[in-house]
Image 1 (cartoon, rainbow, N blue to C red):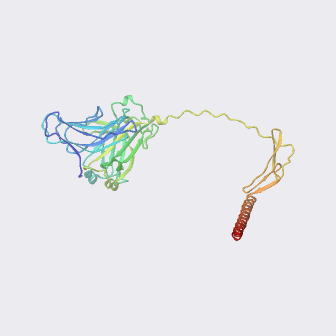
Image 2: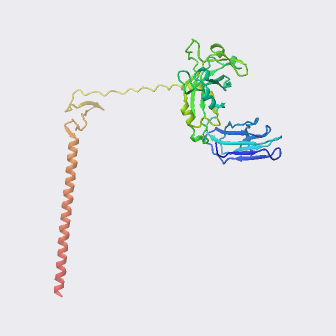
Image 3: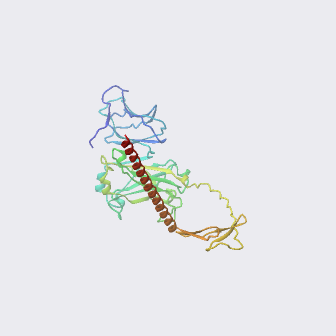
Length: 393
């Protein structure tokens, strides 16, 4: 893809020479961040790329030179304003290239625990058959609790659901099995197919989560699905020839259609990235302490009058040892008075309101006319007095 990237040239300069790329000042709102970037290492093995936050090193994604961009994540836990600094350092030995970084994104999220990079993916899409012959397996990974797991991907879907990516998670035998709780309780595995758009705000990654319910039974046997792999699993072999046990897989055969896969930036440099996280969610099962029951207060029911003096179906009750009438009422009518003897209604109120308005209008009209007549009479009398004074001169 065309575009710009930062390049630390290590083909020239002395050993120990450095170059620095520094971000603007950032103001975190959470106490955790995830820095994500791509690294293309065409330098010597001794060249280093340091990632600094303020005054301490967070990560050093170094290693042997490669001929492709590699995705890296750096977990940060910064609570005050900070800068991110990339420092390229020239090492000893001959270098024909340098260190290149691109698509830098910083988000206030947790970084994935593991990354599975699948290369030559277009070739796999075009040549993999549907069903079990088209499965590829991830390397083994370990959760923070010590459970070993593996992901398998149906590149061209299952036999019943072709032209889709199918993804499944399995527990596998690991070094910690004798010290772990079985069946595996309440670990949530999350598998994310990364949308590799350069701007993290424009990404629409595809995600699937699987939870290890310790009471879930296997569909094909009376065993628990998430029990020890050497008890409920089948034998498998790593590419290096090492044998291990793989438990049942749980996931979906409709993870993502091939049409959707090609419509966005899931495939970049002919490779895809699957981000993996397995975390303990048992704390979500803890119930909150029960709320103490509220005290029930009993209200004294009012006593009815020995004799009912109320009219129009009114109800008489005793209040402070005196009879009081509770008068009936409807949507647009009601009874009132000491004995509910008078009836009121919204129609009467309307008539009263209209009558009052007309009365006020008539009174104001009379006052206005009277005022006008008086002013006219006064003006006429004043004019006559003025005319009489003129004649006397």
